[in-house]
Length: 121
Length: 113
Image (cartoon, rainbow over all chains, first blue to last red; front, side, top):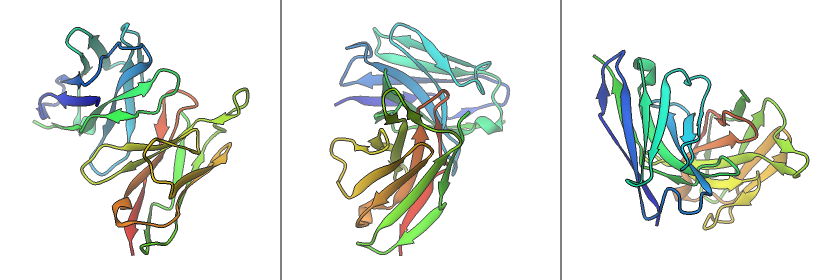
């Protein structure tokens, strides 16, 4: 059974960089090339926002609203993909989910449990 | 970006009764050449990640009880829970994947009356 687990600091200072890693178990990031791997966030008590995603080849998509601050990378040998979000503010406080979705249509069908990142000094 | 608007924001339904959630998109989600609506529904229980229930507006994921059904086309969609069970208490989200970025509705909280 595929499992995703996000990890990283739970507290980040304003203006610094938020860095998270998602580790995939029970499957391979490039097994069939049929999926993207992505990040979605949810501010406390609010809705869901798509951050971006990455294909095993390294091809990426970023939400234009965050594009200038986001980098997503993949390390297939470690079965991990990562999120970097620069120049964070309190508005970036959220539960960050890593997820997988089919290549052909962007409906995440496997999600990690999520990790809360708080931006505060 | 396509704006997704759900109604109501919350509803309370008696056990065994029907719950209906509406979702409107700011533009059509029907991909004519494929005759498919690029609309999905998710269920999020407290403290858990969302769970994909339905894609293509009406196709249930494997293992999803048949009391959940999706309908609609174009820009108007509905999620029905035919007979509400206690385990259905959750927030439900619609999502469009017709264009990037994918966007979600604000969520509808379903509770037991």
